[in-house]
Length: 215
Image 1: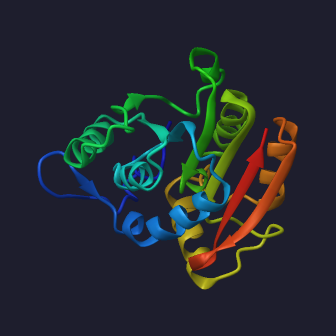
Image 2: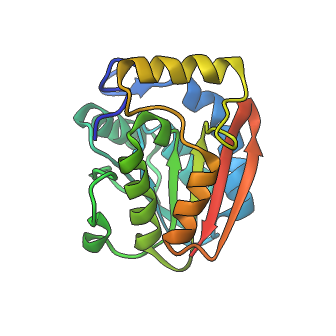
């Protein structure tokens, strides 16, 4: 899975030991927790795909102690960062990070069903075919009535709606034409095709969107 991080577009900074720090993860954590409070199951198992630095999943696990959280990533440095944050937090409902390429077809077949899948700020950093695979595999790994929560920047009806979004999308596509913001209508169509019985599109701060899909 080649993302913009691999292409040199990351704003991650190394702190102490193995920990990486992403300022955006600090900025949007409270908004994501509010979103999860409205839509996440209160108990069960939660899988975060492309957990990145690990800053989010530690806060999720702290806010939702009755959910067992499994962080994943494909990058060695990010896996080490996740485990470093987790070790510092010492939360009983946060498992060690596991290697998982969320863009690989059929990965759900090797995983147990979960009650919640969370993906934050990933789809604009990967190619369209990979984004579609992430959605289909995330829906497939959900158990009955499971929830998939997807967050990030997206096009609205094919349009970029802010100067910042237009600039960032152009930067991504200049690095790799396969990257860039995905369209909200495509996301809803892919989720429905993947088996979602209900899809909600929610406006979020900083011109982001969240999609909540129920299996």
